[in-house]
Length: 351
Ligand code: TXA
Ligand code: MG
Image (cartoon, rainbow, N blue to C red; front, side, top):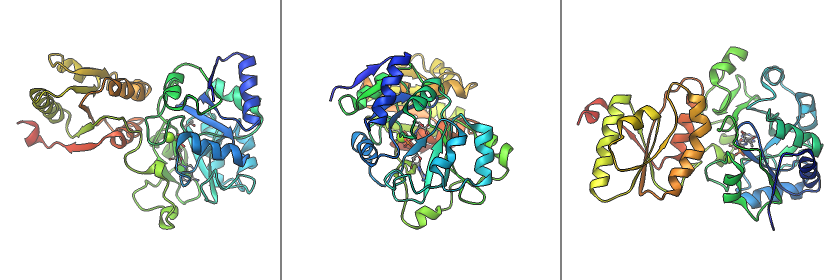
């Protein structure tokens, strides 16, 4: 199959909407990452999404709708808290888990009686959903387990020839996936930190449970692979250093020098202030941007990870970021991408 690269003209979006209605797959930009869209109520289109991505059938999909008023199309009931969050955060990077309407195929939800739903705010996603006129199931448009795509080129690198079209809407503004909140538990459970911070959620609805305890689904053996360790993975080794910034930087430099001495090629994926301190090292480098602005880091993270990975370093090094706001999601993604996490204590850092 030849994958068409579509522009964002009204004619191209109308064509993409028609493709979706016919059960074809179309990748499109959202404010978070590119999604791999298919007609959510068409079993064949849903099956094709899993095949194109190489995604295991037990990892459920997010259903995208144009507005909160469409929620009853895919949700059997709307828990009051979900209604409040939808009113406050949609359109935007928040995915709500609500009871599944029987018209949503069980293949979408991987056998669950709950469904993940969100209203994306990206204007192209909005136009496409309106053109399609149907709910659109869309996981991130990467091969299963790979780094999520933030440009149409990233999508084609993973899925060229496997989907009908990709709408090229440029780089996605947020750069990491939506926050996933399970509204069927009391209090609601944060399943994946993302574009909307935990602080924003607790300001809006009070207590939010973190995913430290096994969820009801997990107790029934229904763990979603997307929520597991080692996801968003690059092809080459990535070591994550965690601890106090000064100790981490000292250890990172020592490990880099040791690897270089052994003739290894090293890639550094670090905030710009850290890279400035490492300017003398003969390494590949990708800047994440300033630690003072996590929004910039989020926007760059996946593209920087892909760019560094493509230069085929023997080993890539990165470090933990501060957990406030968007930082929680950044930390989560770095940890899942990492092949090894090294916790540096002060003593080791001083060596
Ligand atoms: O920002 C985003 O959310 C992007 C854009 C395209 O909207 N989509 C995305 O989809 O990241 P995906 O499939 O890569 O991640 C969806 C996550 C998965 O980890 C999945 O396991 C979880 O949501 N999920 C979906 N339905 C669920 C359900 N009923 N219960 C629990 N987790 C669910
Ligand atoms: Mg994904």
